[in-house]
Length: 490
Ligand code: MLC
Ligand code: AMP
Image (cartoon, rainbow, N blue to C red; front, side, top):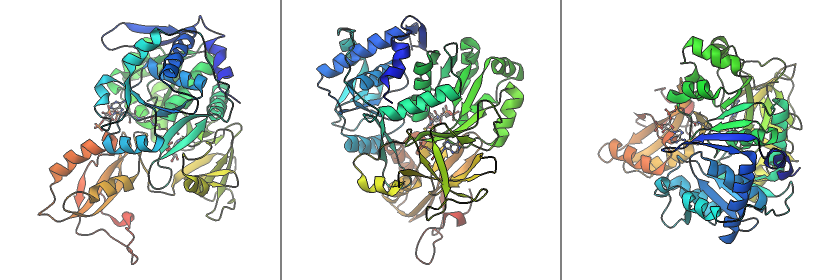
């Protein structure tokens, strides 16, 4: 299944229908129709081609949410480019790795963010690119692409080691978007409030594609801001909202009457990317009168499992395999386990990426007989509902952003006076978990203030340890492996 024909139902088929709105800082609200996105992305495609980009070339974007991200994405679909979305919170160390690994022709960024890029990175300012595109023809150029044409490299650490690029194809996005739009019953009448970042698959693969496939209306915000959420919901009156659990926790702060009115208009609230506590599910239902639909996905696989649209949305579970997705739960040897027995989730389907960019060994380790090993541990009940119970690795998820402790530990070990370092996730009422560092230091050499200041320049804000706990030595097994579960809780 290739992607453009699905999107054409809106780009060409609903050209005159109002599609989109966005509040621009210091300017009036921008309103666009589907046909405007067709024209804008064609112009951008011409501008990119004039700058030398051709099929298969990588093009990164390092941008807050704005309509130009959608233009770039659609231009990428049309030209057969490989778009590399980059988290806006990433800093030097993370950016260097992604840019070195994906070798993009350029990074499209804004003037205020260009300074974060490593020295020497080729970057194009989005406003200049847009001005350049405005002078180009609006007529479509499209390379012949198919389901197997790579469309995006999205960086994830997988279960181990350095961050890897998952190679997602046009077919992966088409299958995921078509399944979700159908299962979640999107129609042209829906109004989708899009506050999730477009550099991750939740906002990009699910949000943008459900919108374009169904031809509904979308309001994009630069980012989620809890202080503005009430105003957005009242003003835009969305029927659909997608969020990470931290957003739903923030929404519980709204006054009951306002929440009830918002809930009465909200046909569908979807949570994913991190576990939604059953308590938040229940409180949201009480306050908003709306039952959150929790689903489970990954960068490498897009969406795998979800609670049903019609039927029981069971708190604490991620529901049933989505259409076209096969899920088996396996023991460490790869044999399926019995109902009620925990095991690793393995998935197979048109949603699963084709492998890791230029890492055949990592790809070989993660796939087995055509099944992708998710690293997530879950259990299936007699009626098929799946409950996730944790992960094989010690991944921390904070506000829906993934943190690999090892990355922070390695950086800490490079700091003066740090002998040993271990990072774990501490429970947090809003973000689910936050990273906390345990360090064994030489007091004379270690400067906590300087270390924190240095980490800020190297790591995304959500990876900054929220506390440093000093220990004499890390607890270790006889073989020297750190026993994180024995660390004193902060
Ligand atoms: C977050 N921050 C941003 C930002 N988003 N800063 C600038 N621009 C953005 N777009 C920073 C803030 O500066 C702050 O830094 C911290 O994050 C928290 O911000 P907050 O305003 O206090 O918000 P909070 O109420 O805590 O909510 C955080 C959040 C954010 C929910 C807005 O965590 C978020 O956007 N999460 C979405 C992650 C996501 O899309 N994941 C999907 C992955 S795909 P500081 O320094 O104070 O910490 C995946 C697969 C799947 O997992 O299944 O979907
Ligand atoms: P990412 O690598 O950013 O794509 O994150 C994917 C990981 O997020 C999955 O492997 C899960 O561990 C986690 N995840 C996604 N959705 C859920 C959910 N509904 N409940 C629990 N964990 C989830």
